[in-house]
Length: 522
Image 1 (tube, one colour):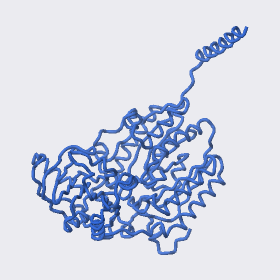
Image 2 (cartoon, rainbow, N blue to C red):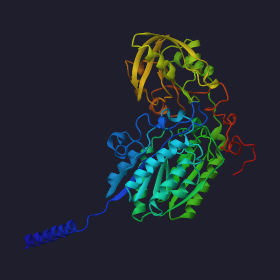
Image 3 (cartoon, rainbow, N blue to C red):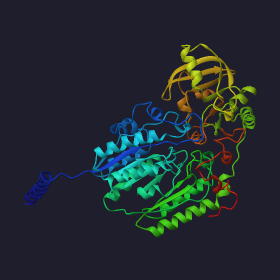
Image 4 (tube, helix red, strand yellow):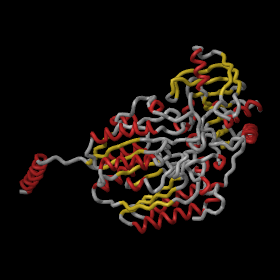
């Protein structure tokens, strides 16, 4: 009897499944993914970045590649979004044709209006062809600068909104160096910003974006937001989240999120080398249908940042002479390896530290890397090979802040492809020193990226990298380097913490602490 009842029940279940399978198929929730990212140094030399600068790797990234395994296996915003979407029930991720990285990265100056319109046409045309979608994810940066487009990320969101309509949720993920205000949220529903620098949590912000869109579509989340802009501007070297008070600011944001259900608190610290009207610090808070809570948290975060403003900017960095003196002391006392972050050099060709190391005859130095496309072109014309002698002047060519060219006499140890470039050179010189030459600004983050062409980074006492904070990821926070020095440049130029030396046309620098006249209040 029991056996009979069991089989009867099983039959009813199977019959029900069969009826469901014969009915209308379950509609997938479709999320479109778009990427348009750049951190623009409008004060950098070299001219505006046009279409050709954005297409060195091809005309664009095809949508299927944008969300494909090859691009998403190493982490990042889109990786997090795709990962979360695979877990969420019935979600289909739709990649949209998007621009790739611009050649030169964050050392490039203004983007042309022509290039922006070109890539927006590509994005919107492909998105339109794949409608309808239930949500749109924008993987952005926040510090893009485009000629005649004051707020590019808000403009991207606006144009997407006009295409998909008012009822499709839009979420964006951002770098904490973004320059944003309330306008992005006029067109989008939420912004998810990294809280760590180096940016360990890009994957998490992509993941949050997917979950946010999904809950919106299912009617489980009605976004209400608040934006505040405490009038504080800082150079990115001051924004390391491993040091107070920035560490405390981000912890306060996480604490608000932990104490309240469905709350997201984001802090943009800004990117001052984009001469745009919304530079500086911004707080975005998103809540689930609770405007009062959003406003109260935004007020608290902005007030806290304002109270911390003096400590936020009160940091000092040694000049090259003092930094090399400290390096020699570290070598003498066994506190090696030493890593020196040449924080202010955005073009990548500054020679101040290199010159001082040579003058003081410091050995076992791996300098990674000096930008000099001219030297690489010369080697190519000479059909240079490993073992050939090298005798040339390198670096110091983008202006006064770069210093003077330095003469290097030595031997070619490597000349070939590396870091995505066709040609990179390694020149051995002096007392077991190696100078790496790249065709554009290259920020070395980990020692592992220096293991090529017979080079073993573990054999060196001193590293020089063109980096402000990101290098801490591989050299400092791993315990690899015993001595860490962030080195200043001898002058009031762009890239330094002395932002008031720059001639802003659009950025309200004189209305932002600490470069205001003292009358600014919050």
